[in-house]
Length: 109
Image 1 (cartoon, rainbow, N blue to C red):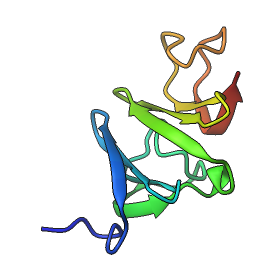
Image 2: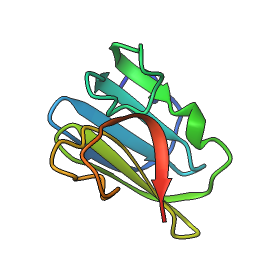
Image 3: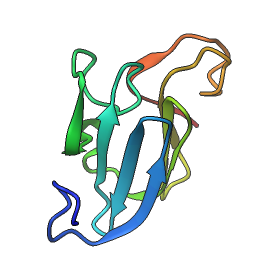
């Protein structure tokens, strides 16, 4: 069955965490779905999650090259080499020098 929200989109990469998934489209959009309990979807902090694909608005207009998902966190690599990471950070997995989780996209270059 086709995934809801990915209709007529050319997906070039898929990444999966423990309870969330991500897709990168040919036109550079990141779409996410699943659980958002740690902000791993990159959507607004009060968003509970989604069973269908949602666009990560905070990345609009940024040319993207690659996506990656950990258990409860996510990463995106831009074409210019900037890494964006968000979600659970209890072991410092976001690489920000602390263990504070992030509910909205932020970058580390």
